[in-house]
Image (tube, rainbow, N blue to C red; front, side, top):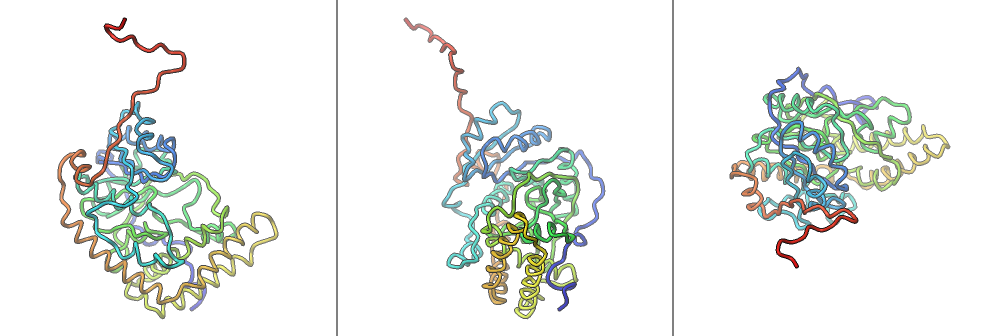
Length: 380
């Protein structure tokens, strides 16, 4: 297998359906933010929700706290629904093999982003929302109309992403590929994605590149589009080599499957023999990028991250890839059956009640220092 047709496709843009300008009159039902940062990071999502006159559902964990979110956004003219994501998960949602299959493996990646997005899918279905936007809390969308354009394309696409500008949305290995001089594109990402929640039956598995897996149906990529621009805040992908290590299994699986799709293949073509060749070619890719690194401090950071990725890659077997994909395909059937049986139940309070979630409301603002407290009527 040659370098050109196996290890790394620098772009998967050919898989995206051509997009035309959509009807700006199509409403956005809700913006859903799987929040993990402090409440100040939600200012952008609140601005967009106010412009679009849609609900803002915030699913909080880690540094994000639903009560602080409610307090911070108290003066914004938006229907904000801040909810703490339960650490024990949501009762009633189906158990998924892909959430446990790697529990005792070094290939496991511990994050709750996928679980929060899955809850968002269920919440949307129960609330009767058909056109929602998933937005990460480190993303800016300069023009709110780009979200209207995105949801307008959901008549023909199952999901529509905004093109991520600012800092590119890539894995550590792909960032390294770009920074050492190679061409490297980006693809649709869950950080700024409109979804037809009334009909899509995919879920986000608990793995890196979960958004790419979400976009796949039984055999290949779903109809997807791209329109507009979103900006991702800058970060340093090479600050900690653990990032590259944690991403590697999901990046291998996603890049391997999408390389097949680029060439007209299907999921069924991802055999152990295919993965054996792909894993070898992936190691060659990482080695080539490392060989481009100079002795500069920055390049040595890149090299350390690539060493971590390569170390993780060496413990991944073709069998690991096939076993995970089969578990994911079984999960797809389980999730699709669950979503087919999930009907709209009414307004937001009823959805919250049925899911066992508590909506936080703003507390009265604290009095300013030195301000006199109002005197109670009848006080002496």
